[in-house]
Image 1 (cartoon, each protein chain N blue to C red):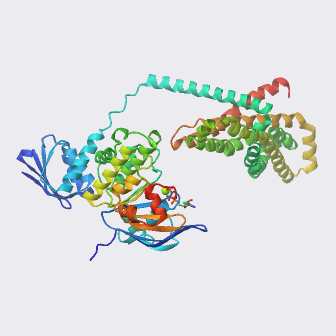
Image 2 (cartoon, rainbow over the protein chains, first blue to last red):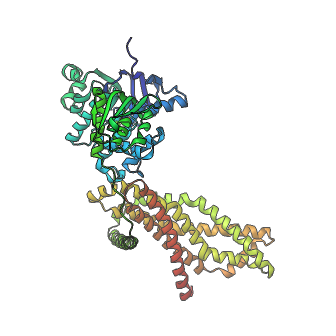
Length: 250
Length: 364
Ligand SMILES: Nc1ncnc2c1ncn2[C@@H]1O[C@H](COP(=O)(O)OP(=O)(O)OP(=O)(O)O)[C@@H](O)[C@H]1O
Ligand SMILES: [Mg+2]
């Protein structure tokens, strides 16, 4: 019997007012895989993430996370579910009045009974993991955009959630840091069986980490490709997909 | 061997006189707290992790809290990998040093220097505003009239209902309160004089100023503060656009024009409220009118409205300056708005004092 998918999306459609962002998006994400969402700017990738975690209402379709349908879940189930996912927002979304350590500590404090020094040690370990060990005491206003991204990842990973959503983790990072981050994501996925859903534009990143991907398209208002990114690069016949992987203007 | 059975399903045992700590079971967030009481333990040189089924980063951190350098014995590949990765991460994030000691004298000095810097920046701002005004007077095309109109609407017309309501209530309150002592001398008929003069000369402009500071000064500071925090103001400057002419001047003009109108409305509403109370006390409109005509002069009204215009200019200036000098971070905009309201109200009361002396000397 096949294992139940971590995420199951069936015929998702989202509209803002009269404008359809995407429709009929259907896919499964399996446990432990790194699933990449691709597509041009403004095609609805961030919106798809928010839809999956229940922040944007669905116009049609159903979505299950870790076996639970979030739209239908009661308060209690929903809270339990949210505790088991981590999200890194495209803009970082760090709490501006707290230092980076306090930002990472917040979910740890809320959801575990660890004593304070242990919490801050765990927070420091998470920041060290993304290379922010020396900036742990700074406020979000005092760090760069790329550092904010990494701090957002550290906060998303604070509780070792089995499912992590990352919205453009490597945008704004230099190639070396970005490659380091890719390596970290792959290591965590392979060693702990964490499932990643990653939105990214970085071609190298996609090929380095992506087990499977889907590509959204603005004109098509939905999915135009699904599969292993390396295979898509070689085999796809769709003009937009080909242009994307060859970095051509469509 | 000190056995230490533990909660869910993690266990710790010391071997070799405490040098080796054997851990087994599942080391995760739920069970990791068990490890904490043992940390740090300098005697431990190795962890026997052969029995560990799984570990998450909380478990790894608390294990390493006991002995950061201890070697790992046994254990599966993923478990070792998680612990080693955490060890590296912790080494990259040294614990924060102690906070710097507190020196009362140097902090007084720093506060003083900061105040002086603020004052200098305020003078800079004033100078820039004046120079820009002169430039705009020479070339009126520089002023963005559409912005002036938009601000006139926001600052002026939209404040009308609030101003009328406040003015009316103040008129009612003043009339009632002053009628009590005046009645003792049978001088109730002079209530209109008292209320009229206080409104026209003082309360109308002052209360309109408070309304402006609360509604508009804070809004200016928040708008410009948000633009500053988002580096929009820097972007304007880099495009070669005069930020003062584009952002500050229209607001100053709008506030300076609106304030006399607001003060006038405040006066009229106040007089209406007072008249209503007088009629309930048995004094007809004609009596009130004749008192007002006899005692109020155009000088009272014009002096008050002139003051109002000055208040408007100063409140808008303080609001804009608070916004443009906003710092970074999420509190910056809120701080700027607070500074605008507090600064605006203090400034108009202080100015009112100056005007009082001035008018007295000039016999106005
Ligand atoms: N709250 C909203 N209200 C109305 N429209 C929205 C809202 N959020 C997003 N949109 C629209 O939905 C579309 C998709 O937005 P989304 O943020 O998902 O794009 P994206 O694929 O993440 O783009 P990028 O790669 O630039 O981050 C855009 O056209 C955007 O204008
Ligand atoms: Mg996006």
